[in-house]
Image 1 (cartoon, rainbow, N blue to C red):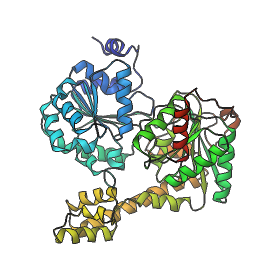
Image 2 (image 1 turned 180 degrees about the vertical axis):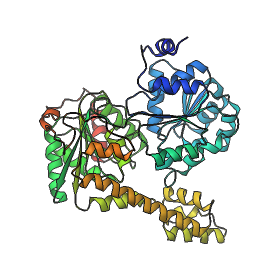
Image 3 (image 1 turned 60 degrees about the vertical axis):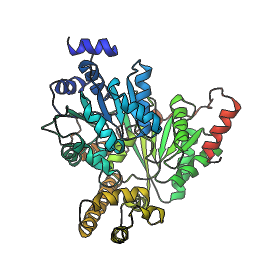
Image 4 (image 1 turned 45 degrees about the horizontal axis):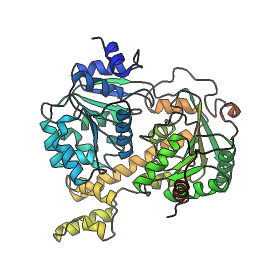
Length: 480
């Protein structure tokens, strides 16, 4: 059977999107593959169709619970019952049941942290897998070294007689690609790299003298232009403040950040996807796994800490292929906030000294968390590196990491401060060339904002019962 016939049989599509067939052919030939395909280009089909062709389990390593759950739910809606996510949503009994019956699933989703658990590794190594997929593979480089070190262990789990590995992402620089090849221990991988440019997204920029001016512009803009939209900001407190002020202006909006309960985050995300919310004010916790086709606006309340994050976040817009706009707001001092955010979870020299002190006293260094000396995230990073290198070497590693993060902030600042084409700068950052510019390309090339920003209409929510409305209001304004 030709691949097109199999595509029609299993998914009902008459033809492949750019890159899909090329990637699938390499996987069917047993070759490791890296696929960089923009958001909305159908990355998941690159492993789903081989799963049906091989008729063997496919393991998908995924970074976020929400992303995992969303993909599992989508597959089930399309009739695939042999799919499961092994994550913290499962209680101990459920997890054991899944592990005991792992051979019965066609698609198995798992987090890097769950993957490296010995019991899970043992069961997976007993399976005859068709394919190993690392979704959002840029996280190996962007998160692995200083946020979630278990990403760096993925390649070690499958050393002998493994099936081909497929690494998927929307964006990656050459450095990130090198990290992916190295830590996944890929063997001469085939690489399909699509342009990171999204011509239907226009790039706007607004520069303000003060933070107060910026805030007033943002409130006025969102109150009078049509969504759906996402406002990205850099702190949990800021998301709550902005959401509260927009609510007072009659905008249907919610804040979203990692400090909210998992159920509340899922609830808010679902309401936004269904259209019961016009806007989300979020930290970068809101992004991957959010599949809403018609996001028309992305606004950055302040500059992100690096260009890669910026591209990932604006990539939430215009997934339906229709026009969308991304507006970056800036005033002097925003880069200092970006520098702080970029390095806040990195261990410092005091943490390193305390770690050694605890170890020398035969006290489990993890007690540092209970003693209020370190956050859980920072400890996880510190523990990983302290088990690999000496104290002085680890200090040098973290100094180097901090320096690299400051450099990335500077790269983002260059984009903000420059008067050159924004789109061209973003594409060049990823080592690519811009083939052509769309009309109304960016702030510097010229944008007719009225063409892309429509006046906000009175917003009607779907009919719901009183208890649902009360719960939503509690979540929106952050009360219990």
